[in-house]
Amino acid sequence: MYPRPFEYVAPKTLDEALAALDQTEGAKVISGGMSLLGLMKLRLLSPGTLIDIGRIPELDQIEDRDDHIAIGALVTHGMTASHALTTEHATALAQAASWTGDVQVRNRGTTCGSLAHADTAADQPAGAIACGAVMVARSVGGDREIAAADFFVDALTSALEPNEILVELRIPKEGGRSAYDKLGRRGGHSDYAVAGAAAWVRSDNGTVADARIGLTGVGTAPSLAAGATEAIIGSDGSAEAIAAAAERAVEGVTVLEDLYGSEEYKTHLAKVYVARALEQALALARS
Image (cartoon, rainbow, N blue to C red; front, side, top):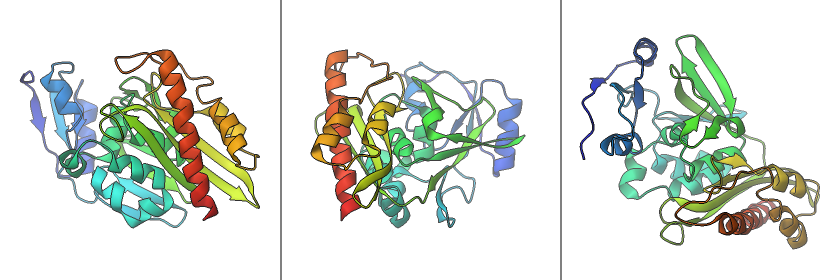
């Protein structure tokens, strides 16, 4: 199916893109187009104007900024998956990016674009939440910082305002290690997540001093697994502690039944993958 007719704008600078977005009601921003164009072809979304930021320079870099790394709006999934800064400081996000779509999607689609799309079963939101990412939303009025845990509001709904562009993802350098694991819709790590979890942990003298756990594929939006996070902090990170934390995987989460599983099945998978992500992250922290 073909999308409905639309106007196409290709600004040369970010300021031009922000001005066009601010002045055009119902406009949508496109970068890689891997998510938005699919919805448009199915006519599930029909924006009157597309604003293509794909030619704007300096948005395709991953930078070291002392206390954090910055991932620009045009950084592809492939770059996020393989860059030395992300594999070191945001392993969970890098793993999630490496399992996003297929090779063509990873070479064209962007990490920030996927996050802004806010799919309930996308991989990278869980990694962003676990790694404590901060989203930088920019409009003609300036920048606004949004914690990843607050960014995903509902299915295909983020905290971005209609006149804002997600220009950057910032990952703090907090020490600790992280990991992501999932069950894909085609088995293994293929396709969208039926259920997936990312965990970040920081150990101190054998005790889990801090942690964050992100869930995807399970609820109405990617979210922080607050109960599991609370349970693992202060523990010794043993198998028993991991199991206890996993039991609280969906505490406070609205589990969503879909074509790929019942609420009971999704709850079970959430516990399994929270445990697996914690095991992997703790193993990295101890190595």
